[in-house]
Image (cartoon, rainbow, N blue to C red; front, side):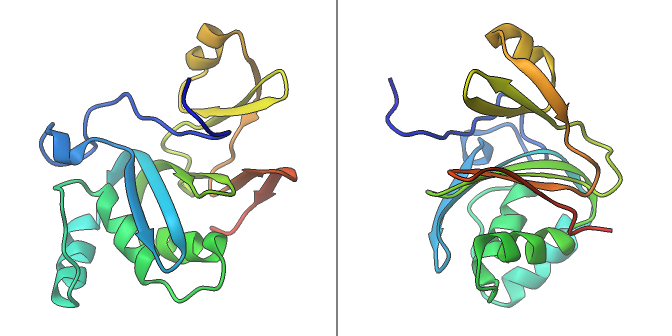
Length: 168
């Protein structure tokens, strides 16, 4: 009964930091690129280093989650499009990760270049789904379309599914 055509959710404990409400995902911000929401499975091994640099530059963090680092990188990006800002942001992080990101116009899924964390594309009728576990599709009666490839960025919008390989 929620309004809207797209949504992201997260049912896992915090990826880093304590399991507390401030670390609950998805995170939502409103920045120069517009509204942006993110949820993340994995671990960013250089998050502390990036966080310390961002704090020195004036960023204010609200959680202990490594995911919030990506939000700040995204918000500070001077890229012209959301996809370019995402690529710029994700290129700076290292580790094992799968991200789901949501803007008012599109859902973006990103898998780390090494493919350490799973991420799959599914379909239920005319609706595309993304999940880290195929059993989520089974519970909904959805079909597995394919695995999202290591280093792949997938955009789901009114045009359908578009795939990019921006990460080596």
